[in-house]
Amino acid sequence: MRIVPRAKSDGGGTITFSLALGAARQMCRLTTTFQTDKQAFSYLHKHRTEFEHMARARLASGELEDGIVELSML
Image 1 (cartoon, one colour):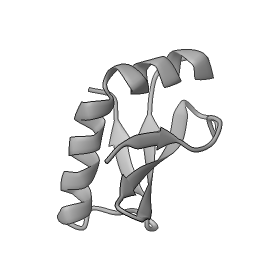
Image 2 (cartoon, rainbow, N blue to C red):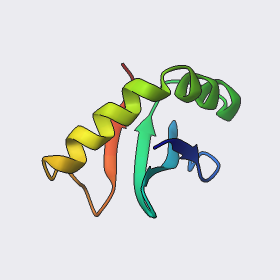
Image 3 (cartoon, helix red, strand yellow):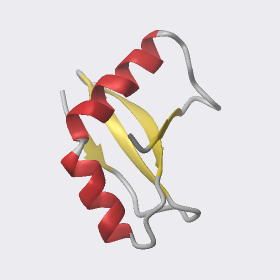
Image 4 (tube, one colour):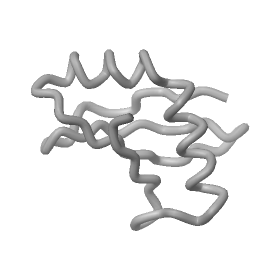
């Protein structure tokens, strides 16, 4: 399973990406303090494994907001 960036930053320091769950995908949103998309995507890729585990745990416990797993910086 892997995390794949799906779209550009949607403003306000957030990045939206999808978590692969077999053939299904789960939308996730990471809130960052970075000023540029490049910095935020670099951070996401650097800590991808940790965010994948956090997203899976929140999904398993039902912690969704409008069907999206919300994450913040480590």
